[in-house]
Image (cartoon, rainbow, N blue to C red):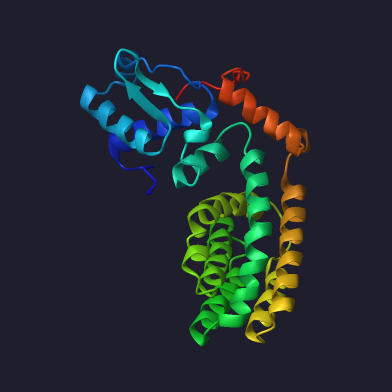
Length: 261
């Protein structure tokens, strides 16, 4: 699903209300005060209604007769949606997404590297080599470096020639882009040396070496992120799950220093 940032007034309302929901400022089960939102945001009922349709499609809200429009439980959210992923990174606990992303990548990408080594074409190799070259040329620009990194991982998924694995980009793409912006905005080490062994193994059609090299790359990625993370915000998996439970039940702590959009 497309992102709505910068797409006129309608997109701005989707952004504002969606962010409030994901941040927990509009809590699970809470009914949206439509009149209050219209007055606060200075919009028409039609604009708000259209924005709510988008948020409904993302699984964030639903409507019932006599109850109105309310925030749905987190398990109903479309967590693969690019906007929902980005809003979680903008919230107070992006480490929840980062943990899930790291675990998913560890499951998917080593297997993808193995398949890519078995099935890659010359066109696939060219795409991987081009993305890696871009990665080496954009070390001074965090946004460009993140885009090149993402292009390389997308090319690897395409090289599997497995349509379902390629669609993992729906989640891995947006989340990896946000993760890369965090890493590349800091003084992370040159990413090229960690990616080169994977490409070399794929080029050599060596599935075992490709899988091993990808596991090493992911370990390096975790280390880079750990160096750029704020230690005061580092949490264990159990603590992250507890935070999710608090948000789902609507009993999380309201941020004290954040103003409403």
